[in-house]
Amino acid sequence: MLTKITGGTIFDPANGIDGEVRDLFIRDDHVIETPPDDVKIDTTIDAKGKTIMAGAIDLHTHIGGGKVNVARTMMTDDHRQRVDHRTDLKRAGSGIATPSTTSAGYRYGEMGYTACFEPAVLPNNARQAHMEMADTPMVDTGGYALLGNDDFLLRMMAEDAEQSLINDYVAWTLTATQCIGIKVVNPGGINAFKFNTRKLDVDEPNPHYGVTARDIVRVLSRALSELGVPHPLHIHCSNLGIPGNYESTLQTIAAAESHPIHLTHVQFHSYGTDGPYSFSSEAARIAEAINSNRGVTTDVGQIMFGQTVTCSGDTMLQYRHRHHASPRKWTCMDIECDAGCGVVPFRYRNKQFVNALQWAIGLETFLMIEDPWRVFLTTDHPNGAPFTSYPHLIKLLMDKSFRNDQLANIHNGAAEMSHLSAIDREYSLYEIATMTRAAPARILGLSDRGHLNSDAVADIVIYDTLDDKEQMFTKPWRVFKNGEVIVEDGEIVAKSKGKTQTIRPQYDQRIEQKLKEYFDKYQTIRFGNFAIKDDEMAENIGSEITTHPCTCERLV
Image (tube, rainbow, N blue to C red):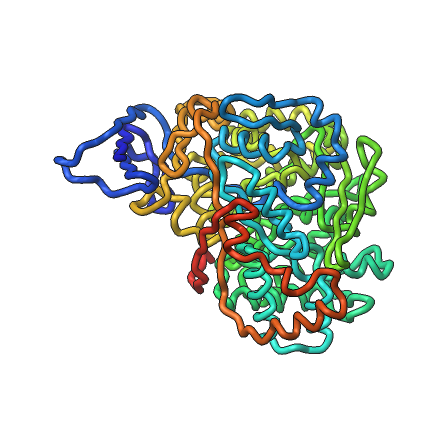
């Protein structure tokens, strides 16, 4: 099947195309070069006056895993507020802040997203996480495995293990969990919480193992760099949410020792201690540090006002914030003592000083980081807000007048302490396409998507070109997944099932003997049952895999 999309205005930053009217050709499930004139076109789609981009990619969204299910279980009122009934095309679902797997997939597809990545896959729970992601329709998925608070790594570091041995363990973890990246949450802090430590700074030794967050960031970022894993170490920094934590963020950048790193939901790590409430914005300092360090990328974790639920592997943080729960219920839990989980419902209020300033800090960060290839559009779904708020966030970034109107509605003291009103920058469509398509694909090593070059997977979105960017990005005119139209005028018109995106770094298999001995002594799961095989992914879990190469070529 050969399809021609004609007359559309294309934004394809990976190929330097900034608003050019070009024809686009799809053969079966891939984009192809312009065919010869004598080749028959089966279908022609007139996209004159419309905007065309590659399918959007969310590199940080909590859509699968144990804590997400805990959040769904707790948020019963949230699921009563929206029930998505079964149709001939769609399965039933529910929820707003914590949508079910089906509702999450359909809403992503309806907005033009074609790939989503779960940033916190606990290795012991990887099967369940992949099952949820496989049950999320319309989008390709992938995950980042959690390390940095696990007993095996901390034991190796306490014993001064060679970097090569740590590299083998990291590579084995990626392979065994079918993940595409590694994330560390509050390096060493979650483990320290189990020894009754309530706060752990970057250079403060873990009370049991004696290693520091700096040590953990250094060895893990180096491991990924030496293994050629495209996505840098995905870091949830120390001291999330604590006034003055911008210093921890700057120290974390230094800890990587020039190895590439990715700072996640950096808005929550950009706080100072100035002002009458001892809470202030240090977005300018964080943006300056990112601008001056080419090896650092970030996603913002923008908050939006309204009800949501915070679900994090950072039990230290969630235990500390349990008193702010709204509604008044919370959960903290653990699995095999290798990580943590805290779920605390929360409502962000525009007239509450701290919440209002958090909102402004996120926008400041977006607007002060100069390179759209190194900052990514996220709300840390659902922690800052549901992902369905992305179109509203895009409008805030693209429309200064609208942004100022919203600024006038927040707490007066927060507005006065923010730099937001003085920032004139407005994102362009080219920059939006960069931060939501080309850059996520590139930093994840997905060479076959995020662009519209020949041989790209035909994940394509066509928008009505509207002045109101929130309306424009809420309801695409057409969405193609693997060359098939799955959305028309914002409505699902065809079923689609994604694949799992993963990598296979090489490692010395002798690490498996050390791991087997460790599992036999300490774990409840047998070593032979731990790793998820390719045939299990396809047959039992229900998601075929696409393996991307490890390479030393990086965005930064």
